[in-house]
Length: 282
Image 1: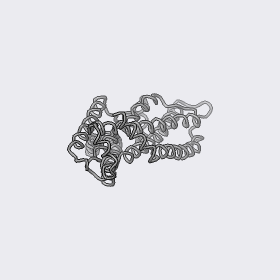
Image 2: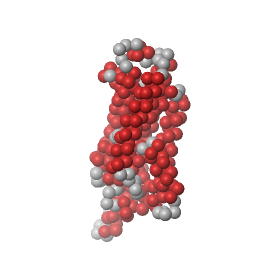
Image 3: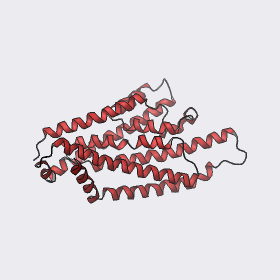
Image 4: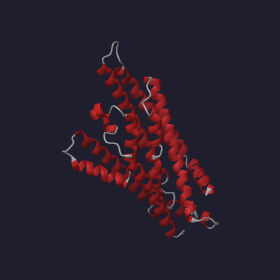
């Protein structure tokens, strides 16, 4: 399996996936940093601030950080999808996997090795972006949100979900169809999560939005993981944040849902191995 992981990482380097991650991180940080720099003057606390001004300042800083974290996680998840989109079907069509399969290497080892390889790429991308975001935010504002490292740890696991789903889809679908399938599923989860946040602003009046959000979270729990991670940043101020929690988490998932997410990940990987075992190499 170690050979498969090494092969996957070498392919990522050959296809310049790591270079794309670095370029994307630099472009994103330049854009976010430029915007943050120009609005940072409006977030300064004046002399003799009132308690309300202090609270507002604190909430706005958390909001802008969660805003940056939202788009950073979006970029990482897109990388996770398009890195693994043709990992099985594309390489079988190009006769890149057949030499591996004729050796004494089982299909489950190939699938699991590729999952670990692409999963590591996603985690590396998440860590790079989150660390760079924290550093840039601190340099510009002098502020580090609370529990940011715990939130970052949870968010770093997000690419594993989409990697597993995309890799499983690549067993049966062409790269183009699989990319459309995985990205559409991710966007549905994203929109469903936002609808659930909007519903939290109007309790008792938008039950259907909450149900849609729950359904999309069950189908693909990536957005739920994001909301759980960000909830630690907004801990203690969520009752005052109001609409600012659109990129935060008004109703964070429970720890039980994180357990469901782990089972979901294992289940998707097992399904992918099963489908790959059923597929002919040629």
